[in-house]
Amino acid sequence: MRILALSGSLRAQSLNISLLREVARLAPPEVTITFWEHLDELPHFSPERDEDPLPSVVVDLRARIHEADALLVCTPEYIHALPAVLKNLLEWAVSSGVWVGKPTAAWSVSPSLEGGARAQASLVHTLEVMSAKVIHQASLCLTLARTGLDSEGRLQDPAQVGFLRLALAELTSAVEPQ
Image 1: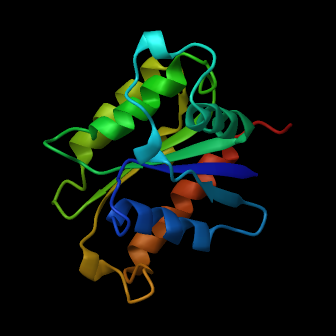
Image 2 (image 1 turned 90 degrees about the vertical axis):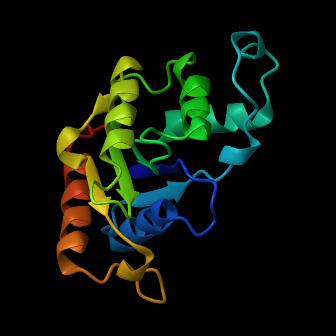
């Protein structure tokens, strides 16, 4: 089982990236979680740019989405919405159709009491418009401050570890056998 993890944050030490790394650590051996970490290299999307020859970073993104059995997208919340860089990634992916029918979990993590719920709702809506197969049982919003992670970036709250494991199990169970 191959899951592609995408963070909507450009910050190297973001809570979103930390959470994705934590779920990769918690994943069972039959699940491989890989990261695509070139968000800041994507050019601004424009339909005029979406023709051959495509930028190599776009080719790579689309290939990785195509090869994945499922996708895990984790977004921060900026001004009550998902960040523009993540929306840009989604715009580059939508025209190719690689995301159509792909099992996808939409996560948000934030120190706010809502856990980034507005950004997560926006992400879910956009993914559904793209015809992704959003797995609502695998999607979550977590309230998490940097203090909720130990010095190795591991979640300290057993309940939150349980949420991650359950969400990952829901996502993997939604993948059709090949």
